[in-house]
Image (cartoon, rainbow, N blue to C red; front, side, top):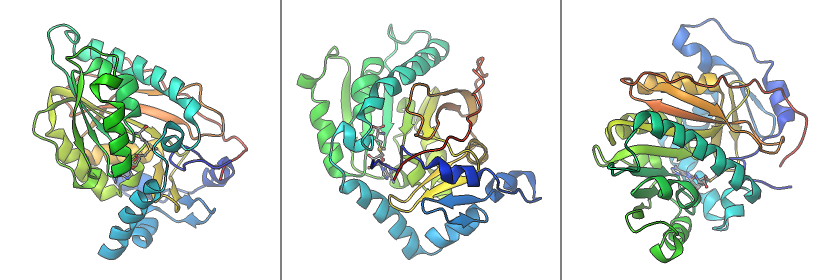
Length: 307
Ligand SMILES: C[S@@+](CC[C@H](N)C(=O)[O-])C[C@H]1O[C@@H](n2cnc3c(N)ncnc32)[C@H](O)[C@@H]1O
């Protein structure tokens, strides 16, 4: 079975991966010192070693992003395309996302759906799957950002008013054909910035600078939702689509560098066992108090599949 590496994993690699050692270092550096793997099973001592090889000079960094987008340019603009042959995870994915955003909006925007005009940004939107199935129902305006033009064109069609079953005051407004690392949102435009299955394409430095810039795009009280695959520890580099699957500890270290707090998080349920675990994070800029979060379950390594 072939599938998009953004969605899948070879857990045999992760079994090795979980045996990595942690070196003694300053606290903030510890997580980045955990070893990682690539999709051929090659081991890296730490993230620095891997990033040096992948983006160590400006040409390499240019190639990293060109190859990442290049991978998706060769993929069909369909549900199966953006979900790596797993179109059937769309339903459980949307259901879990809906429960998550619902509870967040209830806590953070008690007036949403009544007198509040809500605006969202769908990052790495692909064909507009998340916007069409979820965001457009909760937000009056949704902007989409996607660097692959044939995906964005499909999104434009999928989200044309005649193809939507929402009222007229809910619409997709702006379609930005640009990658996250080059995007700066309009100041104070968004209540929610949704980032699903695309942040792995960003190198750590661009991850941090994107979130720092994007914070200014949030309205007061606005927040990010990051929905991503999780590595059991350290990281897993995919050489084919040039993306990195990070562990929770790795994400936490980057959130820290971005000045973001985890307001809530929840694990995706109901996905096939051979896929990476997926977690949803609600991230705030620090002024909001955390609501009761469900404690994410530990995942055991599972033997199996993919690529
Ligand atoms: C697995 S698909 C997910 C699409 C969509 N978020 C969804 O859940 O249906 C990954 C998406 O990330 C996009 N992508 C790749 N590199 C990117 C970058 N540098 N910035 C933003 N998006 C990127 C791809 O073009 C693709 O649409």
